[in-house]
Length: 84
Image (cartoon, rainbow, N blue to C red):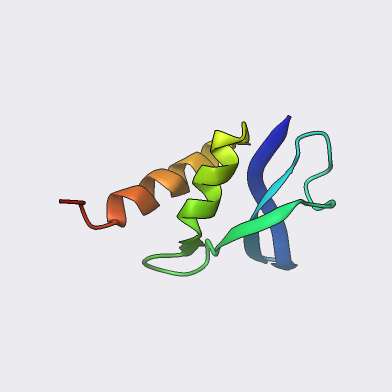
């Protein structure tokens, strides 16, 4: 199964995450198929950046987001302006 999840980057006590599309069997920091965004928990305010069309394309193809990534997707959709 293909998963959309966080890949840890950064140094000790200074985490930084990339939101990646990967095979669910690969390890957390292992190889990935595509990078679709970033998440910085140390930053105040809006601490994520997400390519929503790319994420939705992967979800149509069957990719399952992790709980944290699903939360970021909801926040991104909520922040978009409403379509008329």
